[in-house]
Image (tube, rainbow, N blue to C red; front, side, top):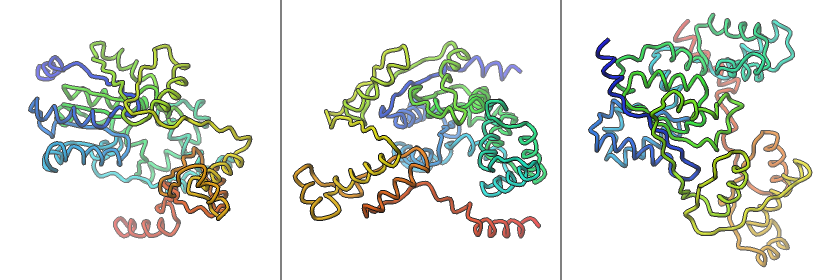
Length: 377
């Protein structure tokens, strides 16, 4: 109708910010929202900011509250992940827990006498729901259909269903999408890209920020070509590059840049604003165990040694640190097991973050099932 045509004609150029690591992506997004409210007179309930984790959403909300002077203005904004926003739009739906999904997957595999694990089935189903082909996901279509049928029988959705069901919703007239801002744009998958386009149809402005060089989630369906796709879909896009890194030392930026430059044609222009720091060290280990042993010994040396002889020698080598100064990052749980074994042998105390999911514990699942039964016999 005429009103919709007028709204489309009034759209401002789509803005894409290419922001390298440590350039202040969250602050840039917060500043953009503050500008819309303070300078442009945009109402908070016309703004939707999309993040990729609940923690990032909470952090953004806190920064906006500090910037705008309290919770009142921010409370009317929509700030959350794709899944959280879709869940809010869908209303009263039953979400399946990880434990329930594993049980259903195990039942499906048992019926078909498949040798797959329940976890690998769920992973493959998720990839297909995020636009991967059956061949790419290495999953038989019959298994996929059997699992989805069991969800439908129970009237339940999984997290990937939230996005696909969200795509079906009519967004015409939803003023919360008048100004749509998307963080970590490089991490979106094709389904999330379609959501962005659909939500933008109801709005006047689209602002995305991210870094193609940080696109590391291809195994989860993320499409690193999303910036190029955006340029094709919106030829009048305005592109801004943030090139000053405030987080890392020149040594780290130089090391990363030399690697990144090998994998792209455009020059790597990110520059560090901090003063010179320690040189980057690369340690090559023959085995995973050797690597874990090195980490444990290195930590022991950094804290001054775990016995008197080591402590005396280490004081001559370097300044001492405390255990709370040190973090160990790893990629797989298999690496974590080896690291823990070596840390224990060195009597090094440690905390493992983000591994235990108490909601998957059988006892907890039984309690949740009991109360769900009481609510819905």
